[in-house]
Length: 123
Image (cartoon, rainbow, N blue to C red; front, side, top):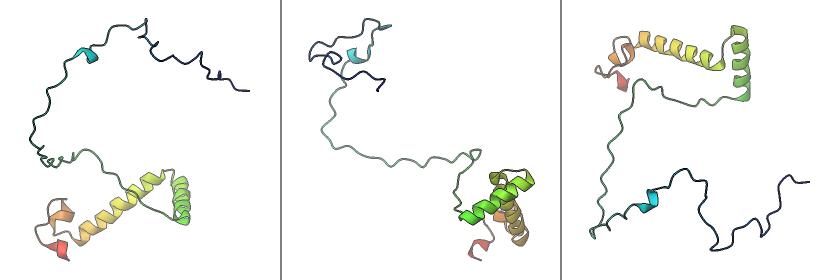
């Protein structure tokens, strides 16, 4: 048993019989505007979009693919540490970046997060 009424011809508006709703709050002026002037006959010129500046305050997202075993182990560790999986992965990444900072401490790209001026990027 369906709770919906069957679609019959009495529910459908007949062609030409449709009218605007009488309960409209105010008339829409959207359709009353003048049409824009026709475009010029010259071909359109497409300018390249400027690169959007990345907002340094907005965090970036990334996907890490785990096996079922790794995901299960991460979940067990999260429960034992009373943390979320996300918090454990963030802590692991922070610890690894700290180790890299000590390893490449003389280079600005790892020590301060600045640009690589010492050429360690090739190492």
